[in-house]
Image 1 (cartoon, one colour):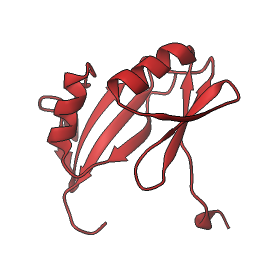
Image 2 (cartoon, one colour):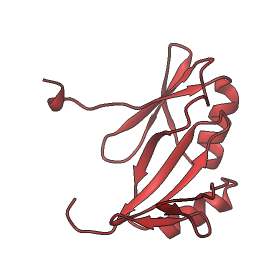
Image 3 (tube, one colour):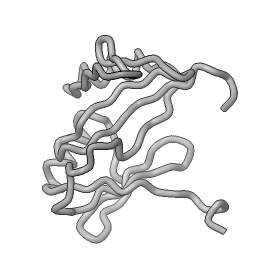
Image 4 (cartoon, helix red, strand yellow):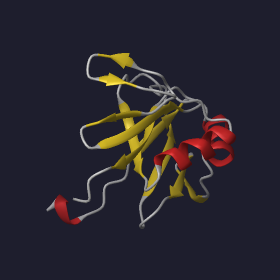
Length: 129
């Protein structure tokens, strides 16, 4: 059953070279290997993402993936220092303040990569994880 296997987020890129500069230079990811015109990046706890060439990059209006972090403010500050720009939202049920929203037992901040994909960093406030 699939519940026994890891799941790997695909992150589409119209321009893989440009996206690599963003993920490596601004997000701080280190490439593990190049595969099929894309690149695999290792993240924490034996997880990884696959950045791949796609004309459909940036077309989703929803988040592609998120990183679960322990200290959201510290991560946001570090990413900002590297040049990442966080989104501001003001809609029913969700309002960011300085790029960060708090709701439903979590804090979250969203940013777009060089390809227009929406990604997030999230800190769970409860100890139930």
